[in-house]
Length: 502
Image 1: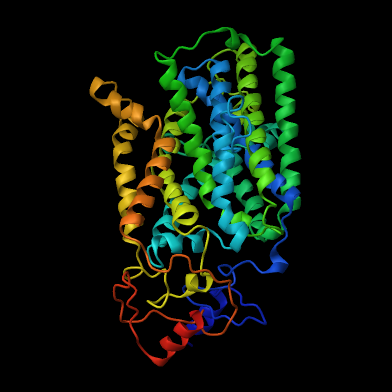
Image 2 (image 1 turned 135 degrees about the vertical axis):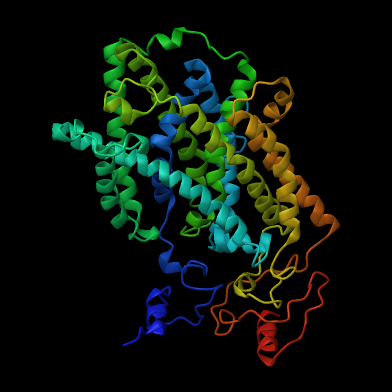
């Protein structure tokens, strides 16, 4: 008896609403169409919950304290955190007073506009920038970065689980290691990871529009842990710790400060690129804005500052190397993982790619198209769509992306490999401004190239129409250059689709 492959494919298909008038295709399904009103469940407080969870986590904690490993003093590390986060967040709230929070919020608001206005996610938003087929590139870029971050979060989750269970069952904390030493993995850590994954996987079955309660639960659990560590370390050390009285050890404070800002922007600013995946669930157009402008920088900054204080105070109590990870601190591990700076350098280095992608997206949506989209065409995978460009690719986006990335790569290589030769210093200093330079450069270049080589369909705007036919439009064999607006006429079906978009 053979396998019924058509039945298997139907099982794997994205579910289709009972009253749906669209077809499931490579370009259109329930998860890709603009979020319907019944799934728009996020109000202002829902987004506050989202950003507090995003900001109050181990990544934010270790972001500030890891800067101590760069040679910055605690005061300078706090300055970096505050500066960088304002730079990502609040648009001109108090420019001289809080320079740092402005950018995270600004980027979050700007990148989230298309979600709040049109209720489309990052995958669909990429289509009007990169082309229907070209949109796979930024999506894969985000998938790659997400895999790296999930790997880190899973490792920390496994460590935390092992520490918690080990406090109850000492046998686990002192379990013999049955793995080879060359694997760099201990049996107890592996058990902790498996238990954590077993608890995490069911959580991803919760639909995004129903995550408000899990946000609240996670926030209070993490806050309890943060406050507990802060109270313990400060009370035991009799203050914030002696590290606050020691000067920085970095040979160049200015460039170390800028590198610290870049490391934070590369980690947090890059995450704002996919903001529309969350803002698409907004009940009202402006529901995400207050949390992006206030909750985002405040929670990230407060968590990072607590992390810096605990790191400094615990150093006085425990001695030895700086323990920059709260899980290692909870486990009372005395050794400091020397790879912390390298890990931060590599992760912040993703800003080399994410900053240009963010600049291109913002320039196209805000300046070139002036926030006007023809939504139905984002779901048509053939030349009748104004977002088809050249065979499904917008060459302008790829050219600008490459032109924006390459000047930053030598500095990334030199930083990660710790090259100290004088000939690399210029590249390293340019890399220290990665996110700022990459974002501004790509934004300006993409705007300029569109002035010289304008795309068709600018100014066209239409709401999403849940009609039979548009979602089922398949790729056609005739894929010409439609840059000049010379739409090729094909079959009767194509003509019908074209009329539907007229």
